[in-house]
Length: 102
Image (cartoon, rainbow, N blue to C red; front, side, top):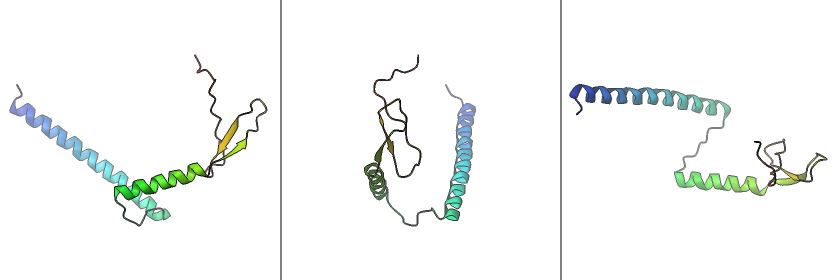
């Protein structure tokens, strides 16, 4: 059975660990907010979680519908490469018949 000493030690270490975790998480969050404020990317509107999800889904839908397909520049394959507007580098084509390295 647990003794009073072991119970107090367990709860004390749990509270101390939670306190340290909170301190470092808060420090990281505050730093990120300061950086966003300095660069002007911090959102000014206060949204609830439903509005945030709708906004993220709309942004995702907008980026997936604007992706275009351009021919690949390599002469060894006839696969097309998808280029999204936010990246200038083409992504490698998905090959369905390639084997994983063994």
